[in-house]
Image (cartoon, rainbow, N blue to C red; front, side, top):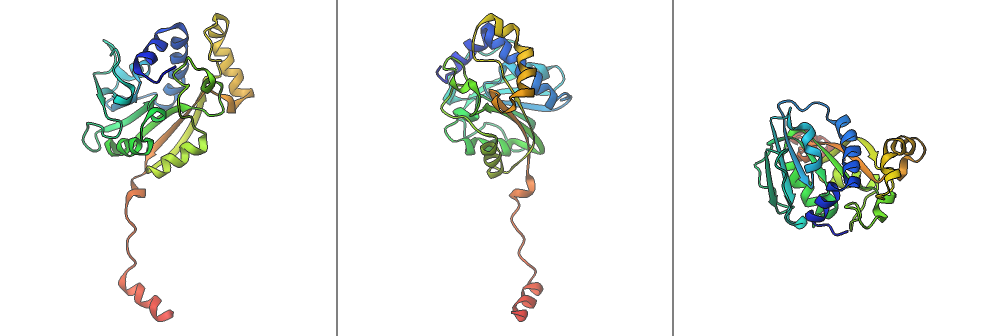
Length: 237
C-alpha cells in the first residue's frame, strides 16, 4: 500500500480499518481519559482517533504533513484541519496541551525535525502519544495496510529518537495482534486476539504506543561553574 492519505482513508473506511481504528482508540483512551478544556493537535492521519476527545477538549486540530498528500476531511471531528510541511508546523510556540502522532513519524522526510517542531508547539507540561509500526510485528508485512511503510521502529529506537528530540518517555503500550487480513473470522475475533496476544506474545504487536512528556530541562544550557569555584579548583591543581 502507498503512504498517501487517500489510500489511508480508504483503509479506515473498510471493515478491517474500522476494527483497527476501534482497537487503537481503546488503547489511546487509556492514556488520555480526560482532556476537558485542553487543546489537542493530531499530526499525520489522525481523523479516526480524534473524535473521542472532541466533546470534552477545548480545541481539536488535525494537521496532515504534505508528504501524505490531500485527503477527504471529515464533516465531524476536528474543529480545524490543515495540510502543512512536516518540518514546519503552522502554529506559535507552546499552544497545545497534547499531541497525537499517528501515520506521521514513519512517513516524515525528517522524523527528528518533526519531533522538534512538536516539542516547540507543546506547552511546557505538554504530552505526546506516538503510534508507530512495530518492527517485530506482523503488520509491517501486510502490504495493503497503512502500517506497511518505509520505516518501522523498535521500542529502543523510539526512546532514543524521543530523547534526542528533548522528550522523556513516560509509558508504553502495544496494539494490533489482529493479523493484517480482511477475513471476517479474524475481524470478529479481534478482541479475543488482542487479549491473547497481549498475554502470550507481547513483542509481536502491530504497533507500539509511546507517551512522552516535553523535557524542558533538557533544553536548558548547563550553567558555568562559579568563578570562585573555578579558582579553587585551579589552586588545588
